[in-house]
Amino acid sequence: MSILGKDKQYHLWNPFTDLEEFIPYKDMGPMTLVRGEGVYVYNAAGKRFINSSGSLWNVAVGHGRTELAEVAAEQMKTLCYSSCFQQTHPRAVEFADKLCALTDYEYDKVYLGSNGSEAIETAVKLTRQYFRQSDDPALRGKYKIISFKGSYHGVTYTAMALSGEEIYEKLYAPLPAGIVHIEPPFAYHGSYGTEDQAECEERCIQALRDTIEAEGPETVAAFIAEPVMGDIGILPLSDGFFDKVTEICKDYDMLVIADEVTTGFGRTGSLFASENWKVRPDIMCLGKGISSGYLPVSAVMAKASVYKNFIGKEYFQHGSTASGNPVCCAVAMANIDIILREQLVKNSAEIGKYLLDNLRDMMKDRPIIGDVRGRGLMIGIELVKDRSTKEPYKMKEVFNIAADCASQGLIPYYNNNFMAMFPPLIIDRSIADDILAILHSALKTGKAESVKKKMRLFGELAASKKQSAIESGKSGI
Figure 1: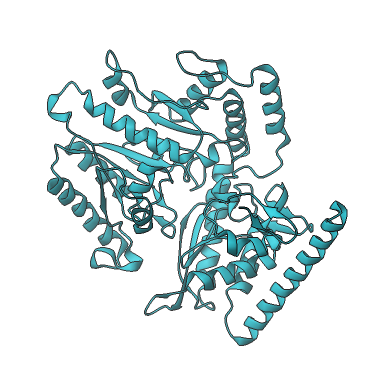
Figure 2: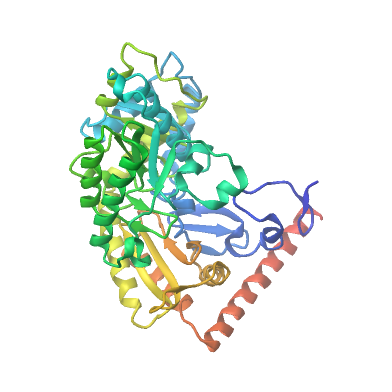
């Protein structure tokens, strides 16, 4: 039975959405968006919002890029679809070569997919098959993957298991076996008994080594991590940390998997966050910014040292219908060309630093801000009731702040007690100033400010009701 909306039944089952809560407000503010242009998105009432959530961290080059639409249309007219199962087509070949070239051919093979979750599943399967058919019999028993508790790697079964979230275990158990978790080095929250980030990372390194020993080195296959952890609250980990992780993994004949689904293609101020490590990861997972969300695309890149275990042996028993879709490949290549041509990686580094510096300065008169973390245009703001105790804001309270941001024309990302900024990489300093001004207002506390926020929300609700009435009249309902 469908859920009743205001005037008609609502049949869409939204992901990660409480439909009973959502339906009454779906026409309010940015809940229903109808178009986008550059860094902005618009609702049915014509209100403009800075798309600071990046449309789920996706849209690197901004909305409305007609050249990408033209590339898609031309490819659809030429070859709309072709499988990569024991055959190929020019766009997939060109795309794979382009990705490898971007890494100076540090990587040799590319598996193309549709989304980040698929990329993670691919990387785990690739890792296990790699060891299963190793020339060294002593390595064939390796299958366990170590990840950070609280990480986010997607929503398919293995990806969920990697996160270590209790809610997934509660709802979907049994989850896939062979996943081992360690605490991430989150110094702000006192992980490993210290609030010093460098010391925290050192202790985490030791915890990784201890965990490998406890699990049995002959069973542990790989370590996977996001270079900047996202959904945990935006936690940038140092390049030196990953250099030491790589050394440990080499010592134990393990692979390193970098989940760059979010961090890739300029989001952190580098084309790839892991390009700054002394040794690139054995496997790199890409998505989101690879196509700016214009079409669903992901990629898993593997070094020649990984592929060698498949030569003359069982080929990779994996694939999906949309792997290497020619239209997706064409659009992704054009998207990457825009990122490079317009120097959006450099812009991400510069504007990201500008936002971070100003947000940290904002902490002087906004005690609600407990911490500001980030790299490039991947920025998190942790909200607390007391800086000394670090008592977190409740998610409902953070929602109210995010709603006030929306009433002022800004869409932030939020989860638990943090808000995050993932704006398109095309933003300039003027738009950054607009973001800062809205945040400065929305993060102001006190009774008088609370009244102002309620008035802004009431105004937003009134506008949405008016627009809904207009639309109902047009449709004859």
